Image (cartoon, rainbow, N blue to C red):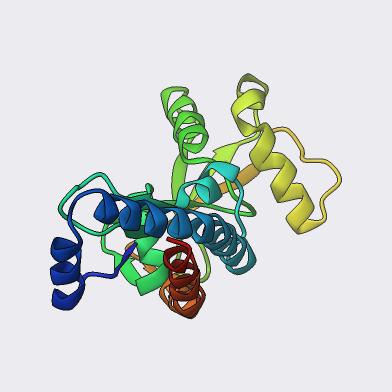
Length: 213
């Protein structure tokens, strides 16, 4: 997801060339300052929007959304960039689907790297197998054995909580994840509309900064 706001009309560029020299530099700096002040508020609004629309587990996901001023090019007016450094975050704003088969953890969220390591350990130990349940879903299972208490601890805790089971017997089958042929992501974010709503305030801030020259 990437949104760039530019005051970049032909008239504006022509005016910028006519100003020239020191005054042009002052105009660019004034516009950049106004944008930077608004960017801080826009960044917080965007992060609050994301946190309100999604169950965010890692703070790093929220911190990936930023708003910053792009003003390094001496031949162009400053621009305001709003976006995320996380490439797949765009899927949550546009919606879409992932066509590859995926293992989805059951009974709660698990970090991708941790989940991969847990499954790999169970596979190496020969304690991971697929079954088809009554609904026709392919479910990855594991047996509750002492040798795999460590990789199974999180899965057992969430399974007990979900099913209301106080204690699991040794040898019991534990559902780990479900294998799905594709994942459909619904549109959950509307950052473009949020930013568009801030444009009048941004324009007013730039006008105020310019009037002080």
